Image (cartoon, rainbow, N blue to C red; front, top):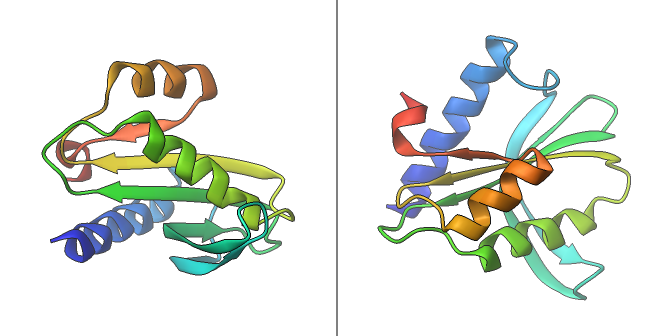
Length: 122
């Protein structure tokens, strides 16, 4: 079900872009995988949206699990953004079926990160 959830989240992002509800209008929205220079290993980003200059991006993680998303998942996405040093303005969005742990909620509030649930998608 994970890949289907990622597709639903991608469609949501496109709808938000068309409604001008994102920080910028993406030139591209898709999935990314490659070598992360910080980790020196393969990494992936479930959904990546970049502006036409590739200096602003939205980095998304999609979790279709019944349990709340832990801080480790948040940290993993932050580390994955290091593969894009040219992107100087980074926005994070998490999509989670099972909600979020309290530390994740508090950090997201401090950092301006969006935490979305299934009900937000429709």
